[in-house]
Length: 149
Image 1: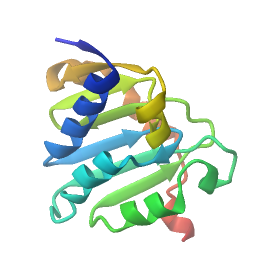
Image 2 (image 1 turned 45 degrees about the vertical axis):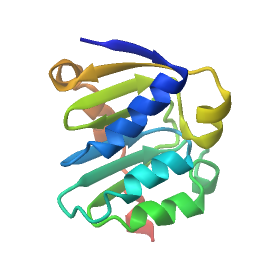
Image 3 (image 1 turned 90 degrees about the horizontal axis):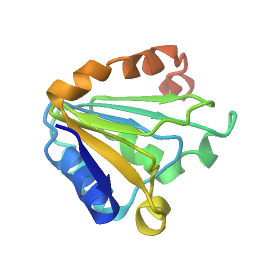
Image 4 (image 1 turned 120 degrees about the horizontal axis):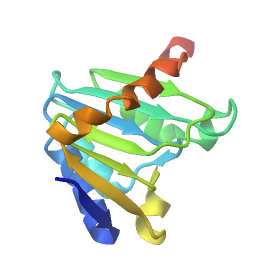
């Protein structure tokens, strides 16, 4: 069943999504500047070599730094099984692990978590697999930014 989330409930469920991930995490957000709580939850997963993390970000033409801070980019690069992609037209915000997904208005940006009025929908695995066209977004993105570094 889908659950409508706002405010602290949205923030808490997103944090739970990271904390309870064992197999994979998908982060799709035009802007990424990790809130300390999210960074801590993700950092606890660095020792899991089986955890696959996919990050898709972008919005600012070809200036990556306007969409993701260098500090966060470096943080993600330290994970053993990470894929980072940039798409300059990205506007979607979607976060998932192997058992749940959140489709939301909220960027993965600390200012958004603390100051904006945001909303999202939490679904369980059975429900979000019905929405697999989200993967077509990922397939459209040709640039794996590790290729350029």
